[in-house]
Image 1 (tube, rainbow, N blue to C red):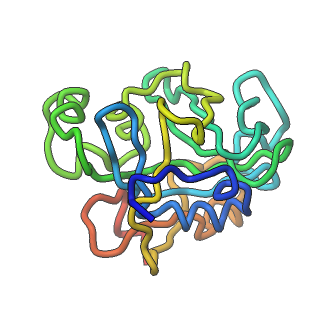
Image 2: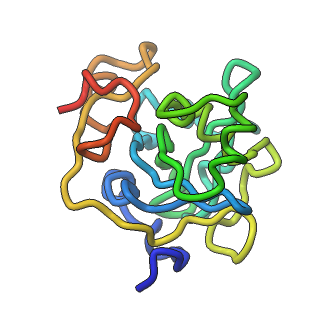
Image 3: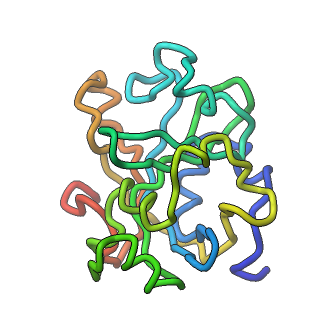
Length: 197
């Protein structure tokens, strides 16, 4: 199987913890930009870190959609955050893409990120969204359709590092501290590396 083969719906139609872990090393492609996923976080409706904890709203409706679609939301009115919907339709679960590293299209990524270079380009979910050129128009986008934003086979990793998710201080302690963040080992292209083990 080629690294550039797109992943199908069946990849996403699994438990979000499994998918979030398995996404590490996979590739995201939008136009000429291809990024290797280096860090993800898992969220689902039965825990207080998830946007769907209190039910469906206009903002989080895509979270309840079919697996293999994008849930994109605006954070702080600035950052477009990319989540990949998992599990089954009607059950809100998604993997947040927290960090990545460039595979191709580096010049485009650097231009979109203000000329920056090195891991600071892509170590944060808002940075990933900016590098891919995402906006709210991608919310509900089918990731398994050809063209547009796609998730590719890439080069999955065997072992991953784990740690607590970031930026969810509002969640209950058992959810806030759960090791539901997954990261590639041996790379600088991850956020908050000191909290990973």
